[in-house]
Image (cartoon, rainbow, N blue to C red; front, side):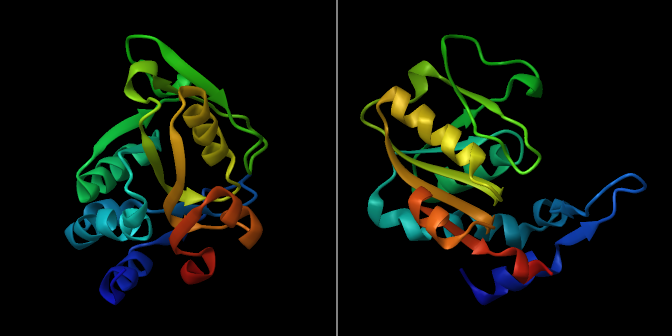
Length: 182
């Protein structure tokens, strides 16, 4: 990742107080999506640690992953498969393969699905997302890959907030840590 991209990611990020009754600040990454320099650089920066592993497809969960996934896939010259959540609106037509995450940072388990015919045994899968805090959704996508016979390569995220052993076990690489955004 270039120093300029790193600087822009930090500059365009903020923590927001959602108001009374909230127990914590919420990350605001909306500045990233408005900035052409960031959009141009994110895909190549995310995939750089994985180029040598030769991914054949990028998978990303809704919602922010649906923006990052195509950027990463384009940088690699491969296709993109979205991982859908039941509450995100209309699910795609056709047979779906489902997996459920372990509890995330809010204690929720998230169901994710991919079109069964979009991921297969010959695929080498790179997952991308904006923020990996617990690895729960990462584990669900890894389970989807296993269910479809695809080979898991790892996950690239803009921000990774995992203990080193968990990051290593999931193959997680991040451009930033939460300390960078303090």
